[in-house]
Length: 535
Figure 1 (cartoon, rainbow, N blue to C red):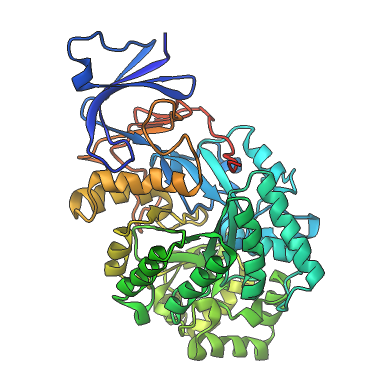
Figure 2 (tube, one colour; figure 1 turned 90 degrees about the horizontal axis):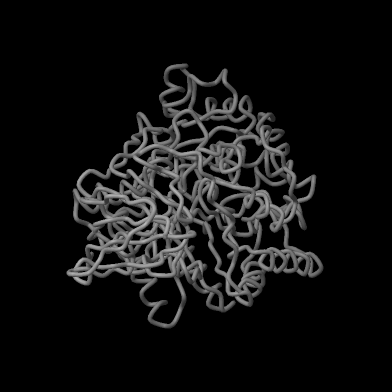
């Protein structure tokens, strides 16, 4: 007898079609049969060792977080309710060109310091891997949800070229190509870049194109955080489209939005650009989170020249008065490339987390608010924070536009991604609320998407991008990564004031046919594993 029958569920199967009522039978991690209500009339209904009454609940495929920053959180926190409670059953790691494989001893220390604001220092982690394959093997020891991995181009460049702003030599480019190929052979699903973050931003288009050619040979995709989401945003999107078209590589645009005052209401221009490329045969998808503020580290705002050489070099420049004044001028007057070419508005920069506990009183206040309270210039406050927190400060950037968010999420190649940073005293609520916020706010309350459309955006579309032949749909033979939610009550509990509040209306989540959330509570099941690229 099979393990589980989910009885009388309203199945929204991820394909975009209308829902239907059915009994769904699960055994050994797979969906083994689906008996629709009409077909069951007059017949004996399926039985199993356990029966779950799903009356009033929607059964859908588990949600795929296409842009996650859980690279260390999955290892540090076996509970991982931040994502499991949302119905997420698969996360894509290695985002924005910076993560922890492939590395050597030098690079590992540099990367840990550079992205401590995203993932913490890692002092509580045993970094017993160096290659992509070894990191995936580490995930295979058991994690809360499944995880796929993108090779981080900035980390590869740091390993081969270093943190300098210069072109790679032919030999260095060959070595980077080899590392990308090796990572793909070991199971990575593609390549990411952070082109407003060092050292990835120092790569010219020709270098990126060559790496994308390697990705294309293996059937992966390129996922860039491109060069600007502010001034010149459309040109930055065009650059990525042209680059991947030349390389013959699939393109997935990370947190694809149009931010800052210069881009208010300009989402239709972006969508027109993408529609034209798609009509010409380009393979493009994108992800977004359903909120207006962004989230990054405070050091990420600095001009690229100030970040050359790595974290210690940045701290040395900040400590020098003359150099710090140059940085201020670029930030406040010129518009630094790290701040997307837009002069920084300190009233939009909210401190969300610090590494140094003594600086905790800054959290929840904008840089300008703190500066005004102290009677000093905002740059003085920001500079002191960077130095005293050793670049570990995370921020929210209140620079988005609701009309752009809604327009982009309607697009036919849209998928969901939280871009969730789990660090800090007041992280962005998207880390704990992205997927129920789509279902509760944008489906039920606003009607921006139908329920069937939204589920497809969060399940089958990302599975297609990841080339996963047995995930993303409720189908016989598919993996039993499933979520049951109440369409009338599902909602994000997380807010900007209380960002770690769990969602409501998601009582059950299964990974590989095992309950990781049961009756709204996290179980001790660690059914997640690394999901490797399908050859």
